[in-house]
Length: 150
Image (cartoon, rainbow, N blue to C red):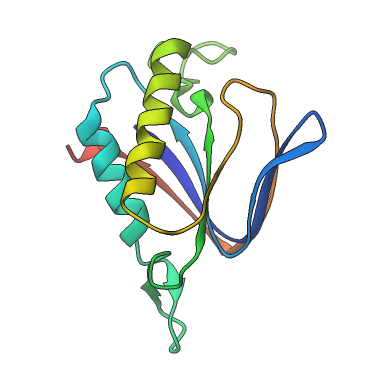
């Protein structure tokens, strides 16, 4: 599982000009899944996201997690995070999970994430054409990949 995580003061996702999810201060998370992903990947990612200390404390040091600040989460599926652009001019998505598995994994990840927190968890719409807008604070952006640690 791979995520791009951005610290935001606001983020929202629209489908057909209708807002499907929005948050204020918190994390905007783009999530992608591979065929090899297992429940352990989702557990690791949920724990990492909820406890990653990327919000500033009183001394302006990144010392607080989204949980510490009672922030919010916006989780959007994005299979293109596994796009491989090393060869040719068109990305290859051979590492991305097929849509059926990716949808199941996305839903499983959301269940795990929401079971670990009382924070607001907003979502996009799986496989929809979405318009994502956000105000990235910092800017602060990280790439997390469960295959690099599990």
